[in-house]
Image (cartoon, rainbow, N blue to C red; front, side, top):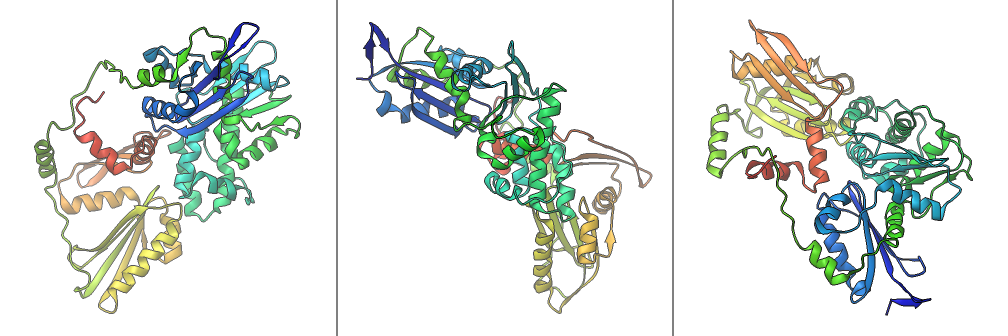
Length: 485
């Protein structure tokens, strides 16, 4: 039996749960405040389900026992309100754990999935936190790793081999890709880019949060990114010029907020039992959402009618294996993808290819050009080639492409081929959105997004991934959803 009496006081297990923007952390303390269980996992926005499943995994440990429970984190407040579980604000939870475990701490720097915080503990506690933008957080690093076509652990490993640091914006994950992609297209080493990404995170934290207030004394670094990413640790220590004694990276860094929540639970009166919590979390709470929008499509039939209405133009194709004659090659080296098209003399498509650039557009284009050459054999002569997009200059130099063409002209040339009377073009790319007004057979004006790239393809892809979907399945989910808001 876990319950013990000491001087007439019943001692309980204490459970702290930290439901952050991207992860779920749990810490269980015994009657001696020793950690007997801890866990760290991504919840993919399925907060209640993941919390329930995690509790079910603790059945052997908690069944038949009483315990105290508290929850914290950016996504924990909703669970607290829905199910009556005591809630503690993150700052108080963190400060409580720091005071017990590292009382010598002057400043806490914490990076989470989508938030960043600095706590100044000298005198009264002062918190600085990022606002609506998740730039410079774990989610930002995830996006950059995805752009480089590697997982975060690999990005961290190669960062130690860097030779130089490039300036990269960290205020927005999508916008930062505008800095990174040209570096890739220009052949910059991935190790240098990895270290530069970390440098951007450090600078965002110091300039954006500290805002001129000195970061000195003993600094405690918390949160998953600052625990798992040793290269990021190195950048912080180097930039802040901290000695080994003044920079503390605790083993429990990812669990500190959950730990503080467990300490807070010990001060509450309410007791819980395993079956009670599982039963509570099994109840799906219906939320009333106001200002609902109409579904995109009310039925499969309506969707099919939409496709039929908008697919009036079919691009003709031709079998490359049976064609003989002249051909024309077009390359598009975009911000996040590469595209290849080979046309015959009558503008039929002989070959086409579309792929993520995976942080290495040159090698992908080379692979495709080798494939096209093999398919062409002696029958097909490529008499001219053109390239457009972010990587236009590099591809023209690397492969001897005949013509470099500005994207807007490429768009208009293609649009005019299918509709000579076209007067408006909209293009949503990986990082940009462009609108063209056409007048008297020429581009009259262009409007495009500037500092922020939200709403572009890269934004949609990253958001879909955070929910556990690829972008294709994410799109299908949206077609027939009944209550969009």
